[in-house]
Length: 318
Image (cartoon, rainbow, N blue to C red; front, side, top):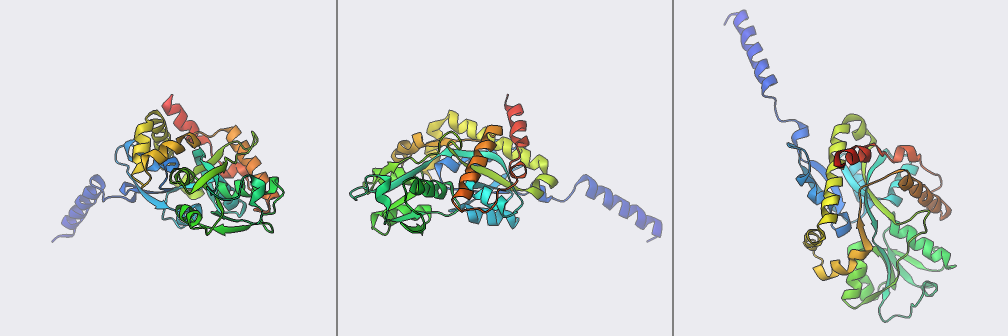
């Protein structure tokens, strides 16, 4: 074959590759992390609202630390996080950015139904289950401290995954737990627990709880993908808030009966919006965390929270 013919064939092959490119990484489902709970359900609905040609795959976790580890390893593009864990991660210098809210409220302090604990002061000397790095941990430590109980000396704090807390309380391994819904409502409806208190902060922190987080590198390399995910998150949140029956029905597929979810619904709030007040509340939360000795320095909140994607989503939804 002549050299000129070879050049023509090579040029033809190149043109074919340009016109019909091989499937790209962007065409693969975007991996998203969340919990299997009603208040963190939005990622399961993203595919309804993502642009054509873009899909997602949801991976479920039982705690925020594992989600964050997968995110930093590049196994997830976006994941849920408690705001307490996000602040802790940023204070350690980790390159994480919160790009949307996920949920508010959702916490309750639960004790045994027939036990002697009648007030927060009665928690002294008791064994309490919690998940480190969550808003629930902060609320628990704050509740104890406010009632003159040292979290280090006066109680025994035991790490228990959310999904094991009810069993631990029912069999007497712990005397109380502070957790997110639906586990408090489940303890009440199944008859082994009762709500001692809904432990929220005042106006300085409010009821903020969790958000959606990405790596800073993702924003720098693929801002359009992050924007599409946040818009899908906003639309999914609005849809579920407008269709509560569909929200709870889908959440029941995670294994929690509808009756329990209906009992918990008043203590759960799906969210996506963030603004300057939200960031101010997060700063107040960070201040409480430092006062409790959970972090030794404050993070750069301007880097931790990026409001631009929520603003873009708000403009699309108007």
